[in-house]
Image (cartoon, rainbow, N blue to C red; front, side, top):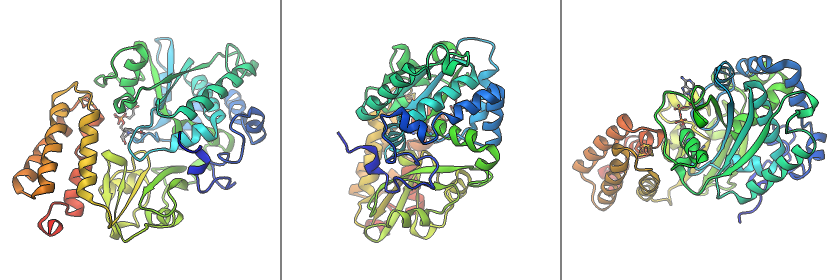
Length: 422
Ligand code: NAI
Ligand code: SF4
């Protein structure tokens, strides 16, 4: 088993942090520690505001999803709360499987009660009595610590039929993933929880209307949920004062690769990639490129390090922020090998349900193998054609994004161009 969360947080214990403030500073097993460090003030505030008031705060704060897609959280909550069909369900997506993403593990291992409290608030606001916490099976320590925190919260009346004696019911059940990347896709999670193969469903209908067991369902990422705590304790306006108009608050970044101090870093949205890399001690050799957004993301060149780390800023720079992957690659790294590894990953993890992705990911990998041996215009053209077909015709995000990193490396870094090959 890997070392515990606090080892992955070089800033651990820094009181100026918002989301990582307690990681490494409190005993993750102790509810008393959590309360002494401000825990459960947000739930008390939520009850004072009432469900509609909580949703209003989350909307005004401008919180957007941290799983990668940046959909406005308040809109999701509002849409679910309004559904007349009952019961409503909450699903916390803790299947964190994007290569290079490990921030949710750090939150669950280092501050598990924060997620319990945040899920309780989400359930209260959207009318859910039941929340599922879907954690990837490869996170045994996170599963243990979350299981313990849920049991303690229940024994102290912070979960159950009458939460905090306030007359509403909410409880959490943990479900473990079993190693499939596709089970992080929100509708594949529903299938997995319902006992079926983990295959995505077509959207729409969106989960807010028809989700788990066909009922209105809110699906939120771990990091998204814990942001609700500072929104309620400090107020929406104070929260929105950090970051930019389009990306409010702070963001957890997973810095890995050929970098001096890898780990999870928390910085306000709008900090530049150059500033984040400086915090992490910089690249170990001469910087060649940085992959943002993970396997489904895009590359940034060394001359582009002033890109602001916001959803809108990275989009304008031709890449994506995604779930916060910052994979640093110095000139010792074989880029073609990295692309091939990404292609192998998608081929392996495709659920096989639809043809463009099932066949396209295989063709993409084959073409990359050939290109590594001998660059050819024919194979580059084939890659583009297959990539377009996957993007346009795949059912879910896996197939739609499986060509992103390869396209970015060819167009932005010149990989497989004659000069790169020589
Ligand atoms: P999406 O854009 O289809 O949806 C984002 C969220 O907004 C979903 O919850 C969806 O139900 C909701 N939504 C969208 N339109 C809506 C509407 N009109 N009404 C109500 N709800 C609506 O994106 P998707 O496929 O859910 O996620 C893709 C992202 O996931 C990518 O950005 C990728 O970076 C990220 N990802 C993250 C991973 C991780 O480990 N954190 C793993 C794999 C992908
Ligand atoms: Fe499955 Fe790929 Fe189709 Fe998604 S795009 S449903 S992973 S085959």
